[in-house]
Length: 272
Ligand code: KIV
Image (cartoon, rainbow, N blue to C red; front, top):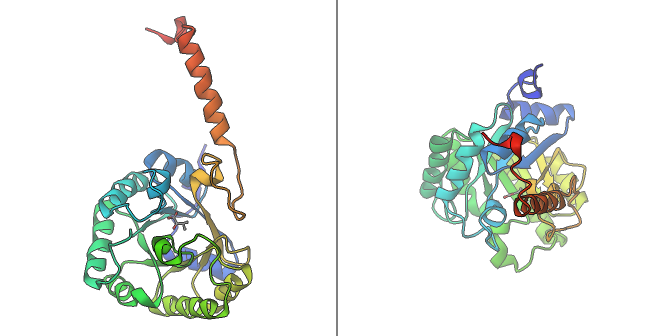
């Protein structure tokens, strides 16, 4: 019996663009390890992001700022090994690309060489234009990220919806057009009004992937642990939970503890 991944062609930047052009929505998720990546890829997800949200959900940090390039590369190596069909993108972490475009290129080259991922993602618009241009000039695909950009949490002060005010909305639209013109292959829009996201998606040629940006964009992304209910402390309005894995894991572990304590596990058929 052939699996989904064997019957569907490998996703590339070209195929993502074709999906936008024919109106096929793009399904994206995060993954940070090999086992998860095999499950996510096998389910037919088109794009896997090794997000710097690993800083929160894998490393337990309060923000995405502490995660390092070395840590991102370690996570990404495992993910790439588990993927056959999806397009794999790796977040450049805070401090690895802002301010100095030569350092930005060096960071992106490390990601591409050491992980075999297919693209990098960077947060910001005109402020990081030079870094984006330099990375693109080396033939490395770049995914933009506008709206709520968690690496700038200390500037924003909150994780509230961005670009409700006209001036910020105008800047976001102009940044999106700039990313499109520079040659980014896609843009993530995080936590902005749905009407603005729709306007952006209609104003740029490349796919726009939303998280908390409504349904009129070209695709959606969620964090794996959030959408499977492994992380019940996090429940923003935009999050749809597809499972309650925290309860499944809690109950299963409780049974295991009870079985060990009662000497029910292992039984005769579970030993040599
Ligand atoms: O790091 C991440 O998981 C992300 C997504 C929320 C888009 O950037």
